[in-house]
Length: 89
Image 1 (cartoon, rainbow, N blue to C red):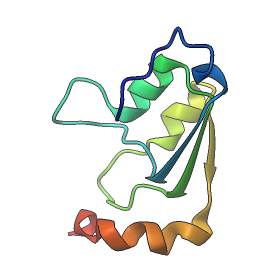
Image 2 (cartoon, rainbow, N blue to C red):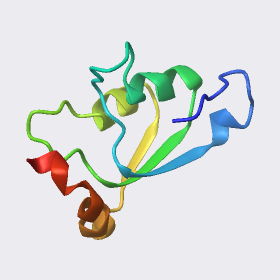
Image 3 (cartoon, rainbow, N blue to C red):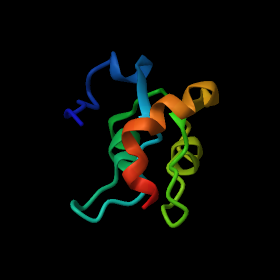
C-alpha cells in the first residue's frame, strides 16, 4: 500500500478500490491496513470480497466503526478470489 498523507485534503474524499477487504491484523508490521487507512482519513472503501480466511479478523468492522464507508460488491467476489485462493489453504 502506498503511503497516504492524512494532511492531503483529497484523502478525506477518496475512495479506495480493493479486491479483498483491508486487513485488520498484520503480523509483518505494527499496524494493519485498516488502521493505516483510518489514520490517513480515507472516506470510503469498496471491496469485491470480505476476508475469506475464517481465522482472519474482520477488516470492514473497524473501518466502519471509524466512520469509513465500506461497500462490498459481492458480484465481483468470485473474480477477486481467483488469484487469492492460497488464502483459503
